[in-house]
Amino acid sequence: MTRIALYQPDQAGNVGTILRLAACLGVAVDIIEPCGFPWSDKALKRAGMDYAGVAKVTRHSGWSSFVGQVEGRLVLMTTSGGTLLPRASFEEGDTLLMGSESAGVPPHVHEQANLRVRIPQASGTRSLNIAVAAGIALAEALRQTNGWPE
Image 1 (cartoon, one colour):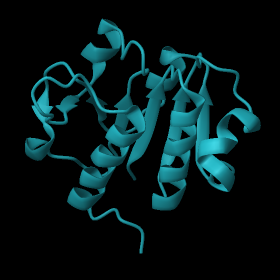
Image 2: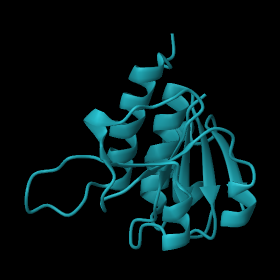
Image 3: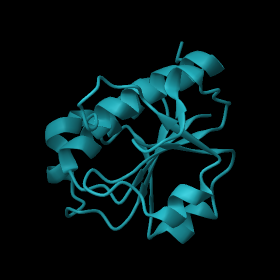
């Protein structure tokens, strides 16, 4: 089953939105700490609403505790290089890794990805909102693996 992993997320609102996305589409979420905000129901409730409690969330104390538990491929969504999303081949069991909003992921995390994927964007734009990018990537991964909920 496809998963979403968030590497040291900065914005509670984005995490809440991703938790809502994951709950609605039946995928689990891994949070790789530290977070850039205090983890609390109040911080996540605004965007995640009541879906935050439904989402399957696993919190990891850091990268090493997370990476040791990954089953399947680690697919890094990145703005720097990688395979364009329309050309990427997803597999059942992939974990879609999203970097922090302010810094992405460090080089050692980038190097451990089995696949690096970039969402094509219009010239002159920097990046998509992390929750939007997660939704686009997850939709394509679920489409390719027939993973949409019934």
